Amino acid sequence: MRRGPPPGGRAGGRVGGPGRARGPCRGRTAALGRHGARRAGEGDMTGGRLWSARRVPSALTACAVLALAGTFLYDITAVRAGHPAMSWRTALARQLATRPLHDPWVLTGATLAALLGLWLVILALTPGLRSLLPMRPVAPPVRAALARTAAALLVRDRVLEVSGVRSARVTVSRRAIRVRADSHFRELDDVRQDVDAALRETVRGLGLARRPAVSVTVRRAARR
Amino acid sequence: MRTPVNRTLLCLAGLVLLAVGCAVLIGGLDLPRRWGFALPSWWSYRGPHDVLLDVRARTRYRKEGWWWPAVIGGLAVLAVAALFWLLAQFRHRGPGRMLVHSGEDGDVVLRGRAMEQALAADAAELPGVLGADALLTGGRTRPRVEMRMLLDRFAGPAEVVSELDGRVLAEARTSTGVDWLPAEVRLQAERHRARRVR
Image 1 (cartoon, rainbow over the protein chains, first blue to last red):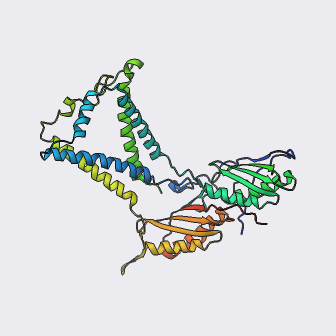
Image 2 (cartoon, each protein chain N blue to C red):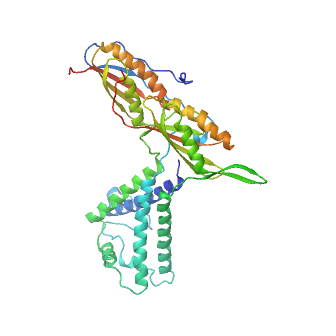
Image 3 (tube, chains in turn purple, orange):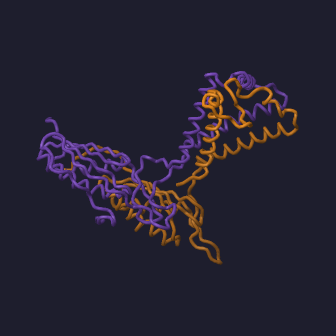
């Protein structure tokens, strides 16, 4: 059961003109614009990207705050109860009171703090999950994403089915799919046309929200 | 799933670090004099010969009766909040419960675990799917589903998702009477060797 071409999206892509018979031939299927765009009234649930829960940075930050606050709390209450202050705290107070701001240690620490802070802000504001490709929304409350590694495997397995292709390497970035295939028989142009046709169908079947640019290189495999 | 708490607190922590770092850098590199701008009067680090925290600033409020209780209380609140934030990262968010039916004779509540197992089993039966895992989150009246599915080598992801929505999730919606069941689906595949079919 194959789904027809999605409404509003043009099926497949244009294959580059007949290329050279020898050497790397490139067919390029252009990116076909974005579809699966927001529909009115769906608000937050549009088929946009999935957002990371940001568990790891949250856990690390919480650990750091907990350790810092806990240590100070322990030592301050100990001092209030009549015990002597721990040596690190008196040393810290002395350092804070004597090191001028132009001291290299202070400047390095301030730079690191500012960069770490900037990074945390970026983590807080960006969706993350860059290894997942957002998929076209089928129905408003269902949002789906395809792992980039899974997309690469599916495309590779499909390209290997084309007769004449001996091996293929597929890299999937967030906007483009790049296929490098080695062919051991048949005319390279024929192989490339078959690979292009296979890719058109397969890439549509991936159901990605943003149609990726597809580039294909078919080369004559070295004789074994 | 959007997690406003994590993101708000991360942003807050980041802004604090960024502000302190920038304040020290502005003073330490003597930027006001080099670049010719004036700092507001309340700014604490004014030049490269200032220190981070001098003795007078550190002991200024020591004589006040409220100082130590305020410091200890503030640190305690911070530590407890950080502890809860940390524990929230490891808490298993499911299984929640779903309110299936509510009437005068009482409510019918479906255990989240049962719902999860049914969803996962149904999803794993779909063509092109090797395995599936479902997690129910959200409250009893506003449930959400998070699913992970493992794809077969010749699956069509678009088809899998539409089948999931049209069959599995639709059945879950009708059988529980929840007409709005948001779902987040992640499709993955296991790495395998390239194999020529013919």
